[in-house]
Length: 328
Image (cartoon, rainbow, N blue to C red):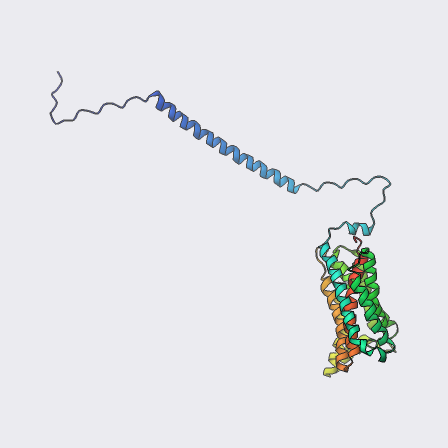
């Protein structure tokens, strides 16, 4: 006989119902989806690692070998090898050459218009220069505008730019004879070779021409003149204690110092060797010395000559660079 239950005592909770088949299937599905998600994440991670490893191997793999040269085929020449180099803003260099020629032509024509009223009183070298200002200005002004081969345009600019250098070189700065001609040759070749070095950074020809120009410039200062070495004379002026002598000596040595600085062209092929900078400074130094000399002497013909040398020298520089560029 069971004991009597008190009236206020709650009946015991019924036991939990056994799980139905639907609930068990739902829980099994959840576990299966979680397991599949983990498997997918693992596969994705493994694929990413394999792709990274393949990319690293591809980066470290050696370059593909060059195609074999056929037997009997001629080896490429040095100029062709330089022509195969990737151009450094080739279109920009071409535009720079044309603009430089145009600017030089305009400057020479302006000089002729300034001197045209004095043609009747001119003679000798000043008269030759006045006529040159007209003819050279027209040629430089027309050459970038007329359709012609690039090499012909470059040769024309070089020839026009060389005229005043060799006409006036022996009479400028008291360097007569071979020294004046050597100075004119340096001023013609050195800026163009420097521009070529800046344009074709691996050019051995540009380095060789710069070296030859520096050696020739050194000979101007080292070869005795009437038993006096010009370099020693410049050092004597600097150490004289006179301000005028010091300034004269420094100005006399400045072209040699600039020429030595251009040896930065032997920097690696990854740089321009400051070729453009030194080319501009060489031209400005030569023309500026003539202009300052004319101002000090109150000689306007020398001032005009300095401006003409700058215009003609710039045109000759881009002409020499275009002529020597094996890619053009």
